[in-house]
Amino acid sequence: MARPWEADPDTGFKQRLGKTPQELRNTTGTPDCPDIWELTSGDIAVIGRDLTESLGRNLPDGVSIGSDERLVVIPRNMLIAAKPDIPSV
Image 1 (cartoon, rainbow, N blue to C red):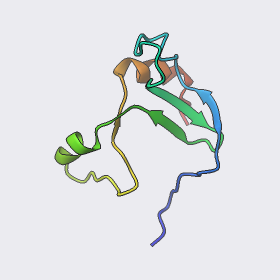
Image 2 (image 1 turned 90 degrees about the horizontal axis):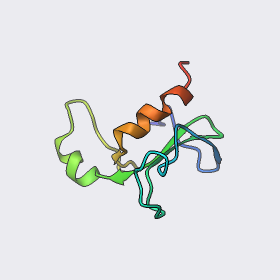
Image 3 (image 1 turned 60 degrees about the vertical axis):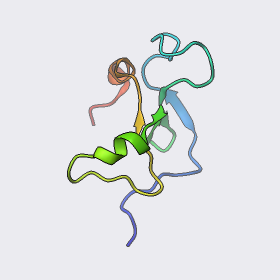
Image 4 (image 1 turned 30 degrees about the horizontal axis):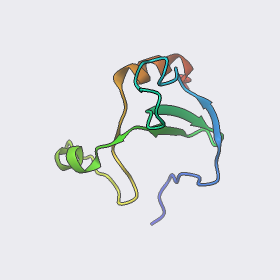
């Protein structure tokens, strides 16, 4: 059965949502920075720490992670900073 949504592998990066990791002091300036981006497809890309193995063992009821998915964690201040850039519809 086909999934109702698939990520577009040919999309591009449109704009950062929120502030840079440097502005939020979530990085030392190295390239391993958490980030949130709106894609040209309208979807959202999240760069964060892959905690699929550790947090994936204790998922709430009704939650699952597909074989092609990862559970990614970003700093709380990063999502709060992105809130003004996220449309309400």
